[in-house]
Image (cartoon, rainbow, N blue to C red; front, side, top):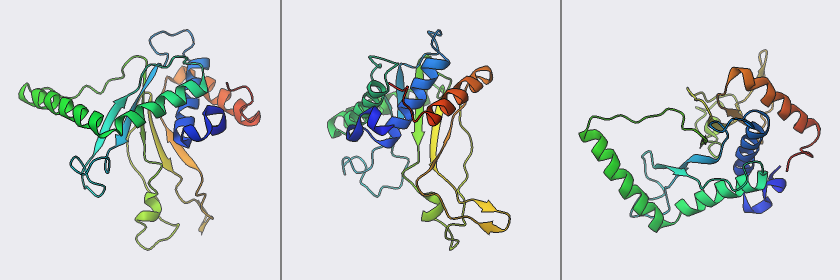
Length: 213
């Protein structure tokens, strides 16, 4: 799938996100101008980009929500994946990040003064990505229970994608060898379209993604 999406020019996460968007657009939102996904809003860790902004080891929620450009072709796996990757590369330029954070700071201070709260409702044509896949929480903090400690969190939302490493699995009283290459993906969508998405995904898995362009 990564090879189809752009090979080494994109990450596995880029390819996976692009595939989910492509599948939604093709099988669920093809005739829905309001729902068709045209851009992503990605939560990006900006630690280590500039020590004057946030050094590598900073203990804070150093995350920026980066809106991508609109996809030139919302039915192209590679175009979606490369557009996502370009938005992440753009944010990791220290000058761009500094200007962006300054603008966000002004807006947030204005909101506080005016007693306004963030509006987290679904934005038409957008897909939010918040991935923790790079962090193996179940191994990093296992309290001495190697491959027997599970990580849990709460919440996801409509077209709000969250990605995590797979937790260790248990068969009865026996812990199974851990799958360290897998991922768990969660997002919400319309109930009446869920089966369309899952059936399309199953076909692609069976066909080894041969119909994905």
